[in-house]
Length: 277
Ligand code: SAM
Image 1 (cartoon, helix red, strand yellow):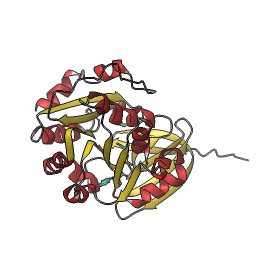
Image 2 (cartoon, helix red, strand yellow):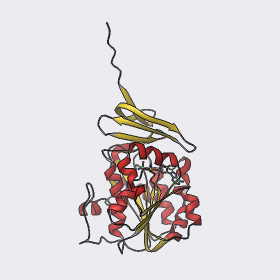
Image 3 (cartoon, protein in one colour):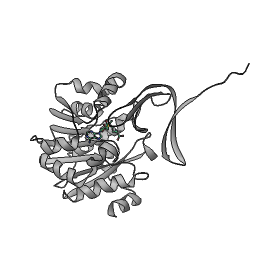
Image 4 (cartoon, helix red, strand yellow):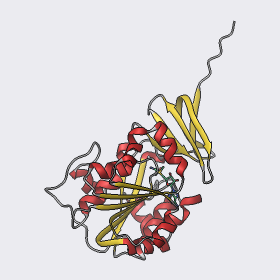
């Protein structure tokens, strides 16, 4: 008798010749929404994995890096400790949860796709549960539309989006950054995830270039996120004053600490060149 062993793998395709593969125990869900396709896998090495349109959004094992770096870096560089935040995207709840942990009094989270939230309620409850906190106001709406109509002001705006294609395309545009400036309070900061400098230089260039047209200070920083393309990820923040660490107040996370806050802004030459182009 021949026993056939079948292995299941999820692969994120970076190009025709390159992919990152996770061996999976099971595929837990696959759903096509009005905006995108969502899948959840149970992987051997990274716990549960959420993908949108075939790209890794988060895994249980390394989500802390992304969520700390998109929140703690701008938080500790703001002139005054921010108390209110607007999150655009972030339907998994991880960013809102981190903000609550840091003591934010008000978080408005605008996610376009209600199904992302539903999927995370079922499969990533530890992240989703921030939406049950009374300080968090979850709205299902297009972030581009929301920003043009809201009358509220925020100390921190976080663009926790998918890559600049499909519904997230508008979240990397100069017009959008201009509208964000209108909802920022006096010492406000905006930060966006800006992709892998190695594989998605256009995302970094679009974010950095667009923000430079609107704000006086724009700074990109990076972090090590093993399950994102190349493991080397960028974020870009913008504000209208010189950011300085509020030393003395700085708490550590699991990835974030005072050294990381300084070192994350030291960019390799190819990244500096991308931003200059
Ligand atoms: N950590 C992730 C990453 O960088 O891979 C991002 C995670 S979060 C799941 C991204 C979310 O942005 C998705 O749920 C997607 O539906 C949402 N999104 C995309 N375009 C949007 C828009 N125009 N307005 C609001 N949310 C949007």
